[in-house]
Image (cartoon, rainbow over all chains, first blue to last red):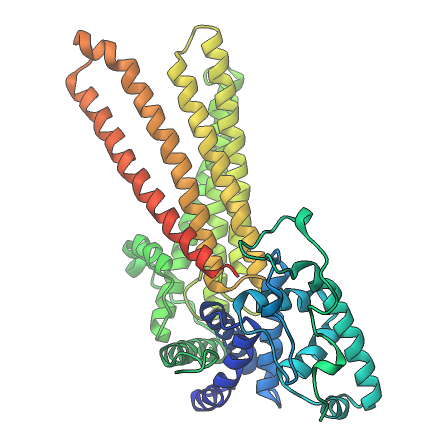
Length: 194
Length: 308
């Protein structure tokens, strides 16, 4: 059984990291981040006493939060965002505005789970292809190939919603326009390998 | 400047407290020994209504003696509901015979059957409450964001029972509305009678819609598609919107009644107190309507604020 002291210790150890993960995924939308962190912890308090605390509690919490975020955004109609909000730079990064983060989270929720987790690990958690490869028992080359396909799939989904006249967040599907390929720098060159 | 991705310390502190409470509740449920059914019918029989009120509060049961007391109360309520149902079922045959003999009409029988359905639902709801108390070791939780108990979704089970009853209720009021319209056509009833029945029918439809909506929200919550707060807000939104629609309809009905009475009021053939009562009711409904509109606005603003 999970006792109070253990829970408090785990809570204090992992909450800040969990919150940071969620907050970055939702572009700093505080009320949404708090809802998701709260839900993830409530699920932990429901599951852990019965099934035991997982070996890696933070990974468990992040996985639950990942699912909650995906569920949240999957149902929402994406809004257009400005190209300047959604660039991936040289360093591991993630959109830092709620609107762009919402679009990327929506796009990730439309990908296969392993692809979205891979992109998260690379861009959000800042893991290198070598680290990911070691974690998954794959070759670095295989990870690079998977990353490339995941980026292409994400780009395909996001491209229609990235446009320079996005003010007003037009939402009509009829108004969707394609953007030049350069808008989203979701390319291998957008990120240094470790 | 604080990092935008750092949690608010007040949120962290508040959630820590909430999780502690949740854990204590779960642990009590997990270690609960077999609960003995207290045979204290005489003691609690006067507290049955109090027990029902306490259920609504759905507070955590801190001590085992409180839980046992609640269980005993629920057992008594269940027995009483069963007795009520048995008595009504006994009366059903008599009513059927009276309808066949022409002493009572078909709608009387329909009403009687609806009453039995209400009693059956009441009985089943109490049985569910008792099951939940026994399985969870706490008072039943009826919020859409309440957790499952050992994999069992008591919230949806209760909603489905209410849904079945609301559906039967709607059938009955629709039949009444049809009958009223027939009577109006035959000149045996006034337009007001038909309007009142139509109003009751619209109310029953809204009630049924609200329950369907709640069941959908519950399902979305369990699938992690919406958070607990969203579930609560969306429930409040549906309730407030339905109240606005209902109260608006009632207000128009009462205003229509007042207009219909006006000539009689002017002629002095309606007692002034009757007219005053109608006006008071209309004013009260108007105030309730304003409150419901305000509630709806607040909830929708919060939902909008939370929308991505």
